Image (tube, rainbow, N blue to C red; front, side):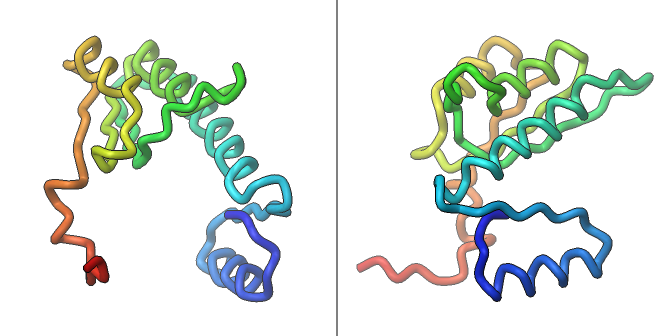
Length: 130
């Protein structure tokens, strides 16, 4: 994650004690920039591997940003599909990039698009909208 507060440091320590590898970045250049780039790199490394049985990537994002020509979630998804992986993508309809709608029609056998909107009641605890 991003952030440099005391709470963020405490959360990092808690995740590390649970056995997770945790990276934190200074968020002065935008809180998600380095987080997304790190996720892209780790995802790309994973989907570059081939396995004797089909593997699945489960990705929760609607972000279809081209990322100024650098690695991005759509690039990682296409790499996964090219290497025989199955991809399940979950997103809110309003935040879903059209690139994933295109993937759903082009790669319909190996790409599954799931909208969170239809399952909202399962994980939204309260709604403060008037």
